[in-house]
Amino acid sequence: MSQSSALGRVGKIVRIVKMLSGPIWLLFLLAFAARTWLLHGSHGPASLGAYLGSLLLVVVIGIITWLGALGLAKMARLSRRGEERFMVMSTLGALLPAPPLAVRESIGWRGPNSLLALSLPPAGGYSYIASLIVLFISCFALLVAIGACISNFWLKQFIITHLRRLTIFPLVYCFITFIVVLVINSLSIVPDTQRYVEVLMGMALPFFLAALFTTPYMLTQWYEERQVAQSVTIRIVFHIAMLILISLYFCSLLIFYVQMS
Picture 1 (spheres, rainbow, N blue to C red):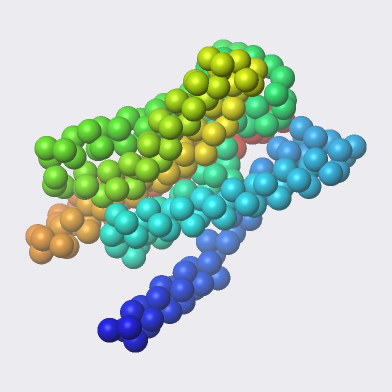
Picture 2 (picture 1 turned 60 degrees about the vertical axis):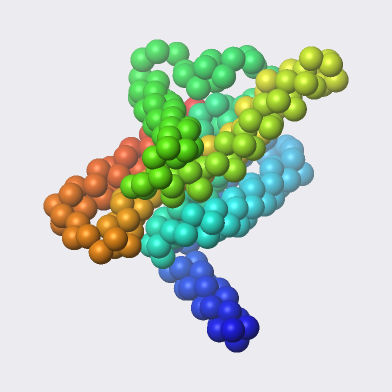
């Protein structure tokens, strides 16, 4: 039993190494290059130490997100392809922050406290449309996660259980973070705590997006586990629609970054 367990762990490690040695590295490198460009524009060449420190922090957050996504995927018992999609999307979401965090990162702790003011630039132009798209997809992913966790208490079927297992801990983390910062704010220990809430809770957003983007593989896994024939047309259409949504999200992010810089 122990030998088979050890062989299983070795097999998982080999599979992860193979996945990382493939073209997926190009996505991570592109995302890291975009984040590097943003940080360079905010820090400038004068503050080299702060710039390198920020890059190191990005790498650490990316690694933590990757490991956290791996743990959530194991807990959700995703299929092999679903596990890979969830881990990759979570890490990309961590490397490419949402507009409010990107703006906060570029201006430091200065600027408005309003999350909406940071999310939406002045009306008009590609940047405004791109930020609206990112905001809509992010809110939709969050609502799907909350809905899955609530409905799972009486509807334990379809892909809801997988969604709940992927998002329950990020949701609990957001709730605890909000309560802790609320208490700190009420005691006036640290000023402008809303800005810290944005950063801390923003670290959970990639998991919600990744869970949404992984739903086609959850649906396929649900059919396979019950040995029910899935319509090829439905599967293809669902995968294509999700790929379009993924492309729309990340392309909108890149457009926002270009306009912001």
